[in-house]
Image (cartoon, rainbow, N blue to C red; front, top):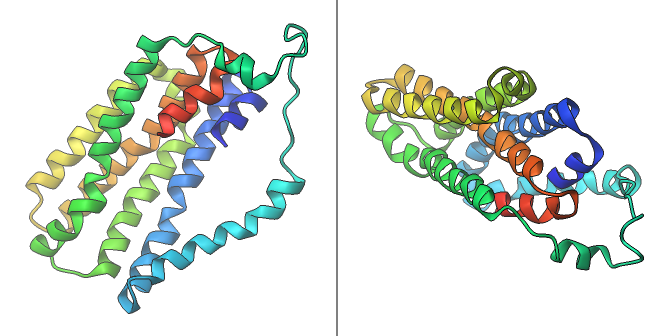
Length: 224
C-alpha cells in the first residue's frame, strides 16, 4: 500500500498521502483497541474476529486500485522484477532508516507489552481499561500523522526524526513518574503522538533516497 502511494503521488502530495495513510492506520485503533478489550473479556480468541473487517475492502482492491503508469522507454522489454533486482540501493542511508525503524518500534511496542502490568500496578484495570488507554495513543498518533505534511514542511525529514524521538522520550519519562491514571494517559498520549510521525516519516525518507525501480524493495525493508 505504501509503495502504491509513492507511485501515485510525488512531492508534497506524496507526503500528505503517506500522512493520511498513517493517520487512518493509527487512528483505527481508537475503535479497534477498545473493541478488542471488550471481546477479550469474553474469550481470548474474540479480538481476532476484528480482522474480518478487511474482507469488506476486497471489492475496492479489485475494482478501484489501478496499476500506476510506468516509463518503460529504457527497459527494452525487460522484466520489471529483473530491473528492480539489478538496481543498486544506497545501503548506508537505508541502514540508518531501518535502524531508526527498529528502535522506534521497540520503544513504541513497549506500551502494549508492558502497559497491562504497569496499569494494573498504578490504577488497576482489566483488558477493557487497557484497550481504552491504548486507544488514546492511537488517537494522538492519528492526529499527528494527519498533519505529517505540515510537520515535514516545517522541520524537514531529519528535524522530524529528532522531534519524533524527543517526543517519545518525554512520553516515557511522564509514564515513569506517573502515580495515577491521568499521568499514565498523558504519557501514553505523548508516545502515541510520536509514533504518528515515525512511520510516515521513515516511509517518506526511504522513498526519497532510492530510484523508482527499487522503491518497493526499500519500503518493504521499513515494514520488515
